[in-house]
Image 1 (tube, rainbow, N blue to C red):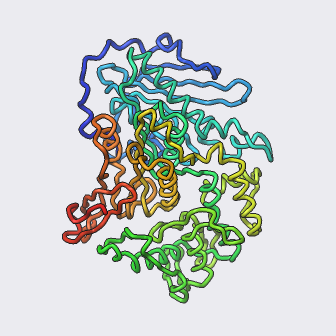
Image 2: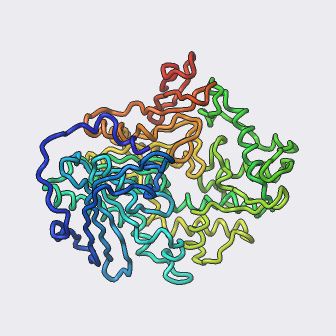
Image 3: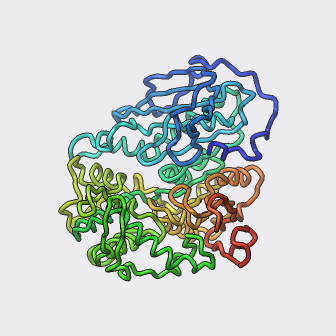
Amino acid sequence: MFLLLCGFFCGTFATKQPQTPACSAKTFKSLSLSEIKILSVHVTANRNFSTSGRNSTGGVGVIPDIPGVETPTVDICLISITYTHPHQNDVINTYIGLPLDASKWNSRFLMHGGGGWSAGGQSSILTPVLLGYASSSTDGGHRPDESTADWGLTSQGRTNWPNLRDFSSIAITEAAVLGKLATKLYYGKHARYSYWHGCSTGGRQGHAMAQENPELFDGIVAGASAITWDKFATAGLWGPFIAQLSNTQPPVCVIEAVKEAAIAECDALDGVTDGIIAYPGQCDFDASSLVGREVNCTDPNGTVIITKEIADLVSAVWQGPESLDGESLWHGFHYDSDIASMIGTTCTSINNCTIVPFPIAQDWVSAFLARSRSFSVNGLTRQDYDRLFHQSVERYSSIIGTSNPDLSKMKKTGTKMLAWHGMADQLVPTNSSVAYYEQTQSLDPDVDSYYRLFLAPGVTHCGFGNGFDPAETVFDTMRAWVENGTVPDRLEGVAVAVGNTSSTRTGYLCPYPQVFTYDGGDVNSASSFSCR
């Protein structure tokens, strides 16, 4: 997928570059910020630096290890900075990568986002540098091998507030500033354009930059953004919570059977039978209609009868968490989402399964709400869940919520943001992105002049699935908007062809609130679809 950042731009700006200075500590001796204390700086010039095993974590720009195919190498000036914020007792590692030869630099700066609890790392800078960009990234103040409780708590019952703020946005901002400073020191001039590209956690980070520091970037790509983290992370425990309340632990094959039944019922509502529910709002499938149906499983082997409890569990995840008095707390998932991610089980036999909570949700509630390493969903009451949910919002919304709809600062700086979200996302509810966009639009009816949202039917978290996946075209679309003024009225997506799973079809997704619509004709032809 590393080719997604290239397109027709790779050969642009082939102007004469300045002579490359030495990739040495002396060149970067002034690299620092007033609010940090540098603990160490390491600068190394590396030719043929292998990218093997150093894949980024955000779902974009990954350099895959392919058997039998030589792994790309990169000539890189690599800078590793370790620093702390005085009196904060934190330690942050920032990584900066620069094309070693100035003639290889495309005059641009690009940061890749993280994924899950990873803010980024050295792996995140390699693809951009390979493609000619200067880049930087950060570990967000914690090592990837640390448990969330290790870095999120100072002790049992005490939140590590500096570390959480670092992960949320502070370390990202500082990595961007340090990276751009290093770019200027090395090449003798500032980057002509600067970009952010992230998905999931990387999408949330992109929204954080749009809300807090938009002046750092000309263009921000934010996919499947885990914004409103204070609600999203707690909502991820809703399925396991309902499962333990009802003492229901269905094998994953049963959850998948319910999903497939919903797709069969609702697929054709858009005029095309292709395994995609393009109009989820028109789909009114009732899981209780499956009560009594047999499901034959192979892993584990056996037959399960769908019960009312199983149907109610699936319906609860589709609906989203509710308070004890019936108040909607957060969004649910669409019928074609693989919600086994939210109510997954591990089984030793067909009748002996254990619920496995969504790890992000389990970590969040354990470390930041219960603030206990031994937290378990078992035994929670409805009152307990409501209390935890409201605690999350009250304590953490201002720190990691990343849901401020006021983008007036971004509008003023001229920054553009292109967001997209798969409608079959199984981890971050699609409607969270829709709700945020609608909030921004209520504040500024002209928001689509600088911020656009595209929904991708049938696409799962950060890409893949049967639907029209824009992951490999979205960055070039952003660059065309920033550099050429080409407004993204459409976003190209690639899907599995109907009737031939070994080939693909192309479609052009629509900016929300327009709807990607089948008009008739060849279902594998892009001309058969329009935006309405």
